[in-house]
Structures are given as structure tokens and as C-alpha cells.
Image (cartoon, rainbow, N blue to C red; front, top):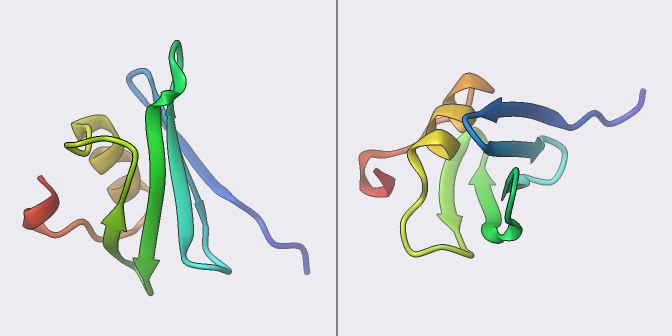
Length: 75
């Protein structure tokens, strides 16, 4: 069985999650990884991110759309 990335687009942000290694990332459509960063998960729970001071609401929506949990502390 091939590992498959989960992907979604919310606004100008693409969010990608690799379920097999509890890691993901997000990038802006126009600015790429300059407005992007990494996402770390423990199971289905977001536990950390980097790259930006505040996690964009579009990324939060994308993570949730893919079936993952974003705690209120990240909003």
C-alpha cells in the first residue's frame, strides 16, 4: 500500500499532512514557504507548528477539513 498525503486548499493556503509520520506543512499560493511552515501532530492532534507567528485561520480550517484536531490554544 502506498502512503498518501492528505491535501486541501483553503483560500490562498494549501495544507498537506503526511499521516504516516505525524508531520505536515502549509504554503501560501503566492508567497510559498515565506508564508508557510511545518505542522507536527500526535495522532490526530496538532501539537506544534513553525514558520509564522500566528497560524492562519485558513490553515486551521484545512487541518480540520482533513479530520485533524486543532486546540483552541492555536486559534
